[in-house]
Length: 208
Length: 210
Image (cartoon, rainbow over all chains, first blue to last red; front, side):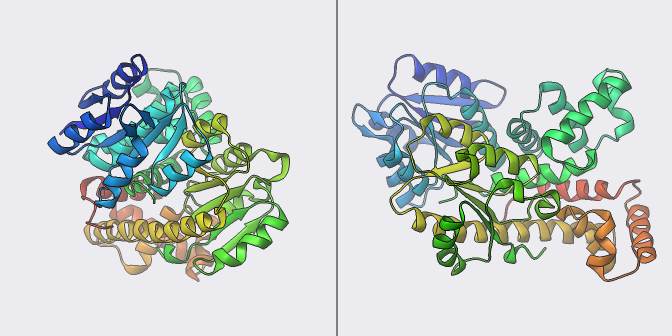
Protein backbone atom coordinates (compact mmCIF):
# COMPACT_ATOMS: atom_id res chain seq x y z
CA UNK A 1 0.00 0.00 0.00
CA UNK A 2 1.57 3.32 -1.02
CA UNK A 3 1.71 6.20 1.46
CA UNK A 4 -0.59 9.00 0.33
CA UNK A 5 -0.12 12.61 1.30
CA UNK A 6 -2.48 15.54 0.95
CA UNK A 7 -0.86 18.91 0.28
CA UNK A 8 -3.17 21.87 0.91
CA UNK A 9 -1.36 24.89 -0.51
CA UNK A 10 -2.63 27.68 -2.79
CA UNK A 11 0.73 29.16 -3.78
CA UNK A 12 1.15 28.47 -7.49
CA UNK A 13 4.85 27.71 -7.19
CA UNK A 14 5.12 26.14 -3.74
CA UNK A 15 2.07 23.85 -4.07
CA UNK A 16 3.39 21.82 -7.03
CA UNK A 17 6.93 21.94 -5.58
CA UNK A 18 5.74 20.48 -2.23
CA UNK A 19 3.67 17.84 -4.04
CA UNK A 20 6.63 16.83 -6.20
CA UNK A 21 8.93 16.57 -3.18
CA UNK A 22 6.49 14.65 -0.99
CA UNK A 23 5.33 12.36 -3.83
CA UNK A 24 8.83 11.55 -4.95
CA UNK A 25 10.07 8.00 -4.38
CA UNK A 26 8.59 4.56 -4.71
CA UNK A 27 5.22 3.83 -3.15
CA UNK A 28 4.50 7.48 -2.41
CA UNK A 29 1.70 9.62 -3.78
CA UNK A 30 0.89 13.28 -3.22
CA UNK A 31 -2.45 14.92 -3.96
CA UNK A 32 -2.49 18.72 -4.25
CA UNK A 33 -5.51 20.74 -3.10
CA UNK A 34 -5.55 24.52 -3.55
CA UNK A 35 -8.52 25.28 -1.31
CA UNK A 36 -10.13 23.87 1.83
CA UNK A 37 -13.07 22.82 -0.35
CA UNK A 38 -10.82 20.71 -2.57
CA UNK A 39 -9.09 19.29 0.52
CA UNK A 40 -12.39 18.26 2.10
CA UNK A 41 -13.38 16.53 -1.15
CA UNK A 42 -10.09 14.61 -1.23
CA UNK A 43 -10.41 13.64 2.46
CA UNK A 44 -13.86 12.14 1.79
CA UNK A 45 -12.48 9.84 -0.90
CA UNK A 46 -9.68 8.02 0.92
CA UNK A 47 -7.66 8.30 4.12
CA UNK A 48 -4.22 9.90 3.92
CA UNK A 49 -0.91 8.94 5.51
CA UNK A 50 -0.14 12.58 6.30
CA UNK A 51 -1.40 16.12 5.72
CA UNK A 52 0.67 19.19 4.79
CA UNK A 53 -1.39 22.29 5.53
CA UNK A 54 -0.98 25.94 4.60
CA UNK A 55 -2.68 28.39 6.95
CA UNK A 56 -3.91 31.20 4.74
CA UNK A 57 -6.05 29.67 1.98
CA UNK A 58 -8.63 31.37 -0.26
CA UNK A 59 -11.54 29.87 1.68
CA UNK A 60 -10.15 29.68 5.21
CA UNK A 61 -7.37 28.37 7.43
CA UNK A 62 -5.72 24.95 7.26
CA UNK A 63 -5.74 25.01 11.07
CA UNK A 64 -9.55 25.13 11.09
CA UNK A 65 -9.65 22.11 8.78
CA UNK A 66 -7.27 20.27 11.11
CA UNK A 67 -9.37 21.22 14.15
CA UNK A 68 -12.46 19.71 12.46
CA UNK A 69 -10.57 16.50 11.69
CA UNK A 70 -9.27 16.20 15.26
CA UNK A 71 -12.75 16.85 16.63
CA UNK A 72 -13.87 13.79 14.66
CA UNK A 73 -11.10 11.73 16.27
CA UNK A 74 -8.93 11.77 13.13
CA UNK A 75 -5.28 11.58 14.27
CA UNK A 76 -3.62 11.64 10.83
CA UNK A 77 -0.13 13.20 11.20
CA UNK A 78 -0.11 16.82 10.06
CA UNK A 79 2.51 19.45 9.34
CA UNK A 80 1.48 23.11 9.25
CA UNK A 81 3.57 25.07 6.77
CA UNK A 82 3.08 28.81 7.00
CA UNK A 83 4.58 32.01 5.66
CA UNK A 84 3.09 33.91 8.61
CA UNK A 85 4.67 31.96 11.46
CA UNK A 86 3.82 33.53 14.80
CA UNK A 87 3.02 32.39 18.31
CA UNK A 88 -0.73 32.14 17.73
CA UNK A 89 -0.28 29.77 14.79
CA UNK A 90 2.51 27.78 16.49
CA UNK A 91 0.50 27.35 19.70
CA UNK A 92 -2.64 26.28 17.84
CA UNK A 93 -0.72 23.79 15.66
CA UNK A 94 0.87 22.33 18.79
CA UNK A 95 -2.52 21.98 20.49
CA UNK A 96 -3.78 20.13 17.41
CA UNK A 97 -0.84 17.74 17.51
CA UNK A 98 0.77 19.08 14.35
CA UNK A 99 4.28 20.22 13.58
CA UNK A 100 4.62 23.85 12.54
CA UNK A 101 7.31 25.23 10.25
CA UNK A 102 7.98 28.47 8.44
CA UNK A 103 8.07 28.86 4.63
CA UNK A 104 9.78 28.83 2.27
CA UNK A 105 12.79 26.70 3.30
CA UNK A 106 10.94 23.59 4.44
CA UNK A 107 12.43 20.89 2.23
CA UNK A 108 14.17 18.96 5.03
CA UNK A 109 11.11 19.38 7.27
CA UNK A 110 8.82 17.90 4.61
CA UNK A 111 11.17 14.96 4.10
CA UNK A 112 11.32 14.25 7.85
CA UNK A 113 7.54 14.53 8.08
CA UNK A 114 7.11 12.00 5.26
CA UNK A 115 9.52 9.58 6.97
CA UNK A 116 7.77 9.89 10.33
CA UNK A 117 4.35 9.36 8.79
CA UNK A 118 5.68 6.36 6.87
CA UNK A 119 6.79 4.63 10.08
CA UNK A 120 3.21 5.04 11.24
CA UNK A 121 1.54 3.68 8.10
CA UNK A 122 3.92 1.41 6.19
CA UNK A 123 4.88 -2.19 6.85
CA UNK A 124 8.04 -4.19 7.62
CA UNK A 125 11.08 -3.08 5.70
CA UNK A 126 9.68 0.30 4.71
CA UNK A 127 9.16 1.12 8.40
CA UNK A 128 12.73 0.20 9.22
CA UNK A 129 14.01 2.30 6.30
CA UNK A 130 11.95 5.26 7.50
CA UNK A 131 13.11 4.89 11.12
CA UNK A 132 16.76 4.83 10.01
CA UNK A 133 16.13 7.83 7.75
CA UNK A 134 14.72 9.75 10.73
CA UNK A 135 17.75 8.84 12.83
CA UNK A 136 20.04 9.97 10.01
CA UNK A 137 18.25 13.29 9.58
CA UNK A 138 18.06 13.90 13.31
CA UNK A 139 21.81 13.46 13.73
CA UNK A 140 22.79 14.98 10.38
CA UNK A 141 24.47 11.84 9.09
CA UNK A 142 26.02 11.99 5.62
CA UNK A 143 24.56 9.55 3.05
CA UNK A 144 27.49 7.18 3.64
CA UNK A 145 27.12 7.33 7.42
CA UNK A 146 23.38 6.71 7.03
CA UNK A 147 24.19 3.60 4.97
CA UNK A 148 26.40 2.34 7.80
CA UNK A 149 23.53 2.86 10.27
CA UNK A 150 21.09 1.14 7.91
CA UNK A 151 23.30 -1.93 7.45
CA UNK A 152 23.83 -2.24 11.20
CA UNK A 153 20.06 -1.99 11.77
CA UNK A 154 19.58 -4.69 9.14
CA UNK A 155 21.84 -6.93 11.24
CA UNK A 156 24.99 -6.97 9.16
CA UNK A 157 27.97 -7.74 11.42
CA UNK A 158 30.75 -5.16 11.72
CA UNK A 159 33.10 -7.46 9.80
CA UNK A 160 30.92 -7.38 6.68
CA UNK A 161 30.36 -3.63 6.51
CA UNK A 162 33.39 -2.58 4.48
CA UNK A 163 32.68 -5.17 1.79
CA UNK A 164 28.97 -4.32 1.68
CA UNK A 165 29.75 -0.63 1.21
CA UNK A 166 32.60 -1.32 -1.21
CA UNK A 167 35.09 0.77 0.82
CA UNK A 168 38.35 0.09 2.67
CA UNK A 169 38.52 -0.78 6.37
CA UNK A 170 40.18 2.56 7.03
CA UNK A 171 37.46 4.55 5.32
CA UNK A 172 34.87 2.49 7.20
CA UNK A 173 36.56 3.26 10.53
CA UNK A 174 36.29 6.96 9.72
CA UNK A 175 32.55 6.65 8.94
CA UNK A 176 31.85 4.51 12.02
CA UNK A 177 33.59 6.99 14.31
CA UNK A 178 31.52 9.83 12.81
CA UNK A 179 28.22 7.93 13.19
CA UNK A 180 28.93 7.10 16.84
CA UNK A 181 29.96 10.66 17.70
CA UNK A 182 26.93 12.19 15.98
CA UNK A 183 24.39 9.77 17.45
CA UNK A 184 25.91 9.71 20.93
CA UNK A 185 26.20 5.90 20.78
CA UNK A 186 28.99 4.16 22.70
CA UNK A 187 29.29 1.29 20.19
CA UNK A 188 28.03 0.56 16.71
CA UNK A 189 25.63 -2.10 17.97
CA UNK A 190 23.94 0.43 20.23
CA UNK A 191 22.52 2.01 17.05
CA UNK A 192 19.90 -0.74 17.02
CA UNK A 193 18.52 0.69 20.26
CA UNK A 194 18.37 4.17 18.77
CA UNK A 195 16.50 2.84 15.74
CA UNK A 196 14.04 1.10 18.09
CA UNK A 197 13.58 4.39 19.94
CA UNK A 198 12.87 6.29 16.69
CA UNK A 199 10.50 3.58 15.52
CA UNK A 200 8.50 3.60 18.74
CA UNK A 201 8.51 7.39 18.93
CA UNK A 202 7.21 7.77 15.37
CA UNK A 203 4.58 5.09 15.96
CA UNK A 204 3.03 7.31 18.58
CA UNK A 205 1.86 9.70 15.90
CA UNK A 206 0.58 13.20 16.63
CA UNK A 207 1.15 14.01 20.25
CA UNK A 208 -1.67 16.33 21.24
CA UNK B 1 10.47 -2.05 31.18
CA UNK B 2 9.12 0.18 33.90
CA UNK B 3 8.96 3.30 31.78
CA UNK B 4 5.68 4.30 33.39
CA UNK B 5 7.83 5.94 36.01
CA UNK B 6 10.30 7.71 33.75
CA UNK B 7 10.75 11.30 34.87
CA UNK B 8 10.24 14.38 32.76
CA UNK B 9 13.27 16.65 32.54
CA UNK B 10 12.86 20.42 32.86
CA UNK B 11 15.75 22.60 31.70
CA UNK B 12 15.82 26.35 32.34
CA UNK B 13 16.80 29.11 34.73
CA UNK B 14 16.38 28.42 38.47
CA UNK B 15 13.56 30.97 38.55
CA UNK B 16 11.59 29.28 35.77
CA UNK B 17 12.23 25.86 37.24
CA UNK B 18 10.90 26.97 40.60
CA UNK B 19 7.77 28.45 39.01
CA UNK B 20 7.07 25.43 36.77
CA UNK B 21 8.22 22.30 38.58
CA UNK B 22 5.45 22.22 41.16
CA UNK B 23 2.70 22.32 38.50
CA UNK B 24 4.35 19.53 36.49
CA UNK B 25 4.96 17.44 39.61
CA UNK B 26 1.24 16.93 39.89
CA UNK B 27 1.23 14.87 36.67
CA UNK B 28 4.73 13.36 36.42
CA UNK B 29 7.95 12.76 38.26
CA UNK B 30 10.25 15.72 37.61
CA UNK B 31 13.99 16.13 37.24
CA UNK B 32 15.51 19.56 36.73
CA UNK B 33 18.70 20.95 35.19
CA UNK B 34 19.79 24.53 34.69
CA UNK B 35 21.53 23.71 31.39
CA UNK B 36 21.99 20.91 28.88
CA UNK B 37 25.66 20.71 29.95
CA UNK B 38 24.47 19.37 33.28
CA UNK B 39 23.13 16.28 31.56
CA UNK B 40 26.28 14.19 31.43
CA UNK B 41 26.39 10.86 29.58
CA UNK B 42 25.72 9.01 32.83
CA UNK B 43 22.55 10.93 33.51
CA UNK B 44 21.39 10.74 29.91
CA UNK B 45 22.22 7.03 29.81
CA UNK B 46 19.79 5.23 27.56
CA UNK B 47 17.81 6.75 24.72
CA UNK B 48 14.62 6.60 26.76
CA UNK B 49 15.92 7.82 30.08
CA UNK B 50 13.27 10.59 30.22
CA UNK B 51 9.63 10.39 29.13
CA UNK B 52 10.08 13.90 27.75
CA UNK B 53 12.25 17.00 28.00
CA UNK B 54 11.10 20.63 28.30
CA UNK B 55 13.62 23.37 27.54
CA UNK B 56 12.79 26.95 28.48
CA UNK B 57 14.16 29.99 26.61
CA UNK B 58 15.95 30.98 29.82
CA UNK B 59 18.66 28.30 29.39
CA UNK B 60 22.17 29.71 29.73
CA UNK B 61 23.47 31.30 26.53
CA UNK B 62 19.92 32.20 25.47
CA UNK B 63 20.16 29.48 22.83
CA UNK B 64 17.51 26.78 23.31
CA UNK B 65 18.38 25.13 19.97
CA UNK B 66 21.96 24.60 21.15
CA UNK B 67 20.56 22.94 24.27
CA UNK B 68 18.39 20.64 22.11
CA UNK B 69 21.41 19.75 19.98
CA UNK B 70 23.48 19.01 23.07
CA UNK B 71 20.82 16.67 24.43
CA UNK B 72 20.35 14.86 21.11
CA UNK B 73 24.13 14.50 20.81
CA UNK B 74 24.08 12.76 24.19
CA UNK B 75 21.66 10.21 22.77
CA UNK B 76 18.52 11.59 24.43
CA UNK B 77 15.77 10.55 21.98
CA UNK B 78 12.81 11.63 24.15
CA UNK B 79 10.04 13.93 22.89
CA UNK B 80 11.06 17.55 23.32
CA UNK B 81 9.15 20.75 24.00
CA UNK B 82 10.69 24.21 23.60
CA UNK B 83 9.09 27.01 25.58
CA UNK B 84 10.08 30.21 23.79
CA UNK B 85 9.54 33.83 24.72
CA UNK B 86 9.84 35.59 21.34
CA UNK B 87 8.27 34.50 18.02
CA UNK B 88 11.00 32.60 16.27
CA UNK B 89 10.22 31.47 12.71
CA UNK B 90 13.92 30.87 12.15
CA UNK B 91 14.06 28.45 15.09
CA UNK B 92 10.87 26.61 14.19
CA UNK B 93 12.19 24.65 11.21
CA UNK B 94 15.37 23.63 12.97
CA UNK B 95 13.44 22.64 16.09
CA UNK B 96 11.14 20.47 13.97
CA UNK B 97 14.13 18.69 12.42
CA UNK B 98 15.44 17.96 15.93
CA UNK B 99 12.08 16.50 16.90
CA UNK B 100 11.04 19.40 19.12
CA UNK B 101 7.78 21.38 19.22
CA UNK B 102 7.66 25.07 20.13
CA UNK B 103 5.12 26.82 22.32
CA UNK B 104 4.84 30.48 23.31
CA UNK B 105 3.14 32.60 25.97
CA UNK B 106 0.47 32.91 27.17
CA UNK B 107 -0.52 29.69 28.95
CA UNK B 108 2.87 28.03 28.61
CA UNK B 109 2.51 26.40 31.99
CA UNK B 110 -0.67 24.63 30.89
CA UNK B 111 1.17 23.60 27.70
CA UNK B 112 4.06 22.14 29.67
CA UNK B 113 1.71 20.22 31.97
CA UNK B 114 -0.22 18.83 28.99
CA UNK B 115 3.03 17.82 27.31
CA UNK B 116 4.24 16.12 30.51
CA UNK B 117 1.02 14.18 30.91
CA UNK B 118 1.06 13.10 27.25
CA UNK B 119 4.75 12.18 27.39
CA UNK B 120 4.13 9.94 30.40
CA UNK B 121 1.26 8.17 28.62
CA UNK B 122 3.28 7.76 25.41
CA UNK B 123 6.29 6.44 27.31
CA UNK B 124 4.04 3.89 28.99
CA UNK B 125 2.57 2.86 25.61
CA UNK B 126 6.06 2.49 24.12
CA UNK B 127 7.13 0.46 27.13
CA UNK B 128 4.16 -1.88 26.76
CA UNK B 129 4.87 -2.38 23.08
CA UNK B 130 8.55 -3.05 23.74
CA UNK B 131 7.59 -5.38 26.58
CA UNK B 132 5.36 -7.42 24.26
CA UNK B 133 8.16 -7.69 21.70
CA UNK B 134 10.58 -8.74 24.43
CA UNK B 135 8.12 -11.35 25.72
CA UNK B 136 7.79 -12.77 22.22
CA UNK B 137 11.57 -12.95 21.75
CA UNK B 138 11.94 -14.45 25.25
CA UNK B 139 9.48 -17.17 24.27
CA UNK B 140 11.04 -17.83 20.89
CA UNK B 141 14.57 -18.16 22.31
CA UNK B 142 13.28 -19.87 25.45
CA UNK B 143 15.12 -17.43 27.70
CA UNK B 144 14.78 -17.72 31.45
CA UNK B 145 13.50 -14.76 33.45
CA UNK B 146 17.03 -13.71 34.39
CA UNK B 147 18.27 -14.08 30.81
CA UNK B 148 15.47 -11.91 29.49
CA UNK B 149 16.41 -9.29 32.10
CA UNK B 150 19.79 -9.08 30.38
CA UNK B 151 18.06 -8.31 27.08
CA UNK B 152 15.86 -5.73 28.78
CA UNK B 153 18.90 -3.94 30.21
CA UNK B 154 20.54 -4.00 26.77
CA UNK B 155 17.43 -2.40 25.26
CA UNK B 156 17.43 0.26 27.94
CA UNK B 157 20.98 1.19 27.03
CA UNK B 158 22.37 0.27 30.42
CA UNK B 159 26.14 -0.26 30.02
CA UNK B 160 27.26 -3.82 30.48
CA UNK B 161 29.42 -2.78 33.46
CA UNK B 162 26.25 -1.94 35.42
CA UNK B 163 24.38 -5.19 34.75
CA UNK B 164 25.54 -6.84 37.97
CA UNK B 165 24.39 -3.94 40.08
CA UNK B 166 21.07 -3.64 38.22
CA UNK B 167 20.30 -7.34 38.53
CA UNK B 168 21.67 -7.67 42.05
CA UNK B 169 23.99 -10.53 41.07
CA UNK B 170 27.75 -11.06 40.83
CA UNK B 171 29.92 -10.24 37.81
CA UNK B 172 30.38 -13.95 37.22
CA UNK B 173 26.65 -14.55 37.12
CA UNK B 174 26.28 -11.73 34.59
CA UNK B 175 28.94 -13.34 32.42
CA UNK B 176 27.12 -16.65 32.56
CA UNK B 177 23.75 -15.06 31.78
CA UNK B 178 25.09 -13.13 28.80
CA UNK B 179 26.82 -16.27 27.49
CA UNK B 180 23.59 -18.26 27.74
CA UNK B 181 21.56 -15.57 25.94
CA UNK B 182 24.11 -15.51 23.13
CA UNK B 183 24.18 -19.31 22.92
CA UNK B 184 20.39 -19.46 22.70
CA UNK B 185 20.25 -16.78 20.00
CA UNK B 186 23.24 -18.37 18.23
CA UNK B 187 24.73 -14.90 17.85
CA UNK B 188 27.96 -13.41 19.06
CA UNK B 189 26.86 -10.09 20.47
CA UNK B 190 24.29 -9.16 23.09
CA UNK B 191 22.92 -6.28 21.00
CA UNK B 192 22.02 -8.75 18.29
CA UNK B 193 19.23 -9.81 20.60
CA UNK B 194 18.07 -6.19 20.57
CA UNK B 195 17.85 -6.68 16.81
CA UNK B 196 15.55 -9.66 17.32
CA UNK B 197 13.31 -7.33 19.30
CA UNK B 198 13.49 -4.75 16.50
CA UNK B 199 12.40 -7.40 14.00
CA UNK B 200 9.55 -8.35 16.26
CA UNK B 201 8.46 -4.71 16.41
CA UNK B 202 8.57 -4.44 12.62
CA UNK B 203 6.55 -7.60 12.13
CA UNK B 204 3.85 -6.97 14.66
CA UNK B 205 1.22 -4.39 13.92
CA UNK B 206 0.69 -1.79 16.59
CA UNK B 207 -2.05 -2.84 18.95
CA UNK B 208 -5.05 -0.51 18.74
CA UNK B 209 -4.63 2.40 21.10
CA UNK B 210 -1.07 1.42 22.00
